[in-house]
Image (tube, rainbow, N blue to C red; front, side):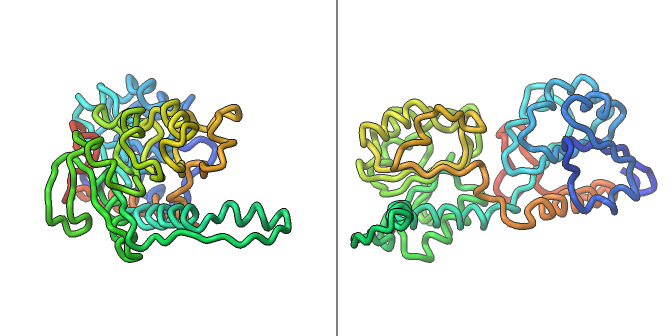
Length: 325
């Protein structure tokens, strides 16, 4: 659009407004709203910034988006806004790919170390003032399958390689010679390769093809001593099947940052399992992450006003930003 026009920008944010929005407020009519007011905010709006990226309010208010041309979501995952009417529209969809790559990689390494070095038991024994010598595992030389070969998966692969782990990937297309993963296995044949790995890290985008990909058959295919780490989406996992696999000791443990129901209900058995590490959807949330999300949006906003190509444009057929896009 022409830089001389003042666009109307709707921002779905609830009570907590995004920081550092003053430069945008100087050149646009900004309508901050919660889910209840989204339909009103969308009428005659040119763009929508979904700062509350966990909100599911957009599909229900979409009927009011009579002038919308661009939607940006403050997350790498776009499943909360990937509904048929948006897919079929001419509205350009962008995401915040790149903000959380390194912090999620650090989280994954931390969880692998926590399992190998038995930190949870050390903390428990410390609280009990019990001195109990134990041996721990090495992570050097252990094998890891990273399921999801986008930027976050690549950051995970690079960091785990740096500490001496053997890393492979699983993605849409099988290939050899990948600069970060070496070998990439086809996700369609995931269960054939799961028995080879000591750790399995789920970071795939949520699509119709990946939903429920970690089910009873997948957990049965893993090594009995394998650990499972999910930093992708909760819906990648059939939770009941994971619980049963842990109870039956078909796998040795799980570190879970995302769940199909959030917050995780207090009566969910995962809470009380000693071989499970739970965090509340925070693996990427470093100090200053909210400012970083607004920086990504503000850069794209400047591009949009100047009529320049946007970055992180999502292929609405695939449900994610293609490699190189």
